[in-house]
Image (spheres, one colour):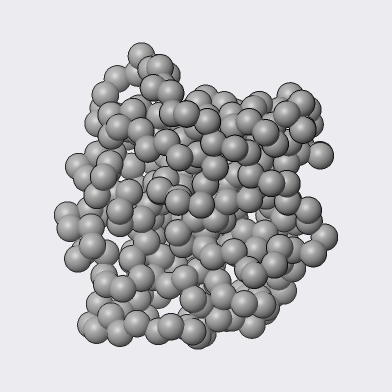
Length: 321
């Protein structure tokens, strides 16, 4: 998605990876990471000072984090009553009007054929004119909230508040950091992301990030276990099955055939997901990292929901908080 992650307890953390902050969120270090789907601008947001990345430490084989059942045995999320669909029956769906700096010809499988488009954003989009963004066809937004165990996107609270005011369906995502325990990261997300009615399911963003201070690449078995621990804690707290966001290389290394009971959000900017992730069902498709829109300076990620307007309303009734 883009961004991510990733402050003696401030100076000490600058020099060592994996330091946990026990202070409040004010004054915490800010993430200096980016993901493969969101590119950092040439210069950071002016009013935000980003500390230097910690020096990576030697990889240590992680200990098991839970005695939970195998990942494929996750409970199916409880569906909300059919009556909940009435709350979304009259929701306005705006037509896509985004442009693209690097348009791709997807042929007959073009995302333009799908009805419900949206965006994902982080601090790197700066101040957003949410009404203009909504008018461009952003019907939903996923907002960067946290990464690791002590980093909070400095724009999260503002974006979270303003997206709701503009009428977008909003959700929050966490960039997973492989040098922290899953429990720490889940607790940090829960501490910072409100549990509110109508919010989209939380998202765990899992990908390899060559710019990260964490150079570890755990085994597939350890990756799946850590993800399960994180997602179980979020599901227990929010009452929603978390969505897994991922990119092609990480998926190929770790996620083929895994988490069949979890919804997926797939990055695929050069071909339809069916070609890049054969056999994998998906809820959201990130089809561009070079979108252009009124209300946002620079480029923005573009996404689409897998279904028509009626399917979107039904999905919200089942899945929104």
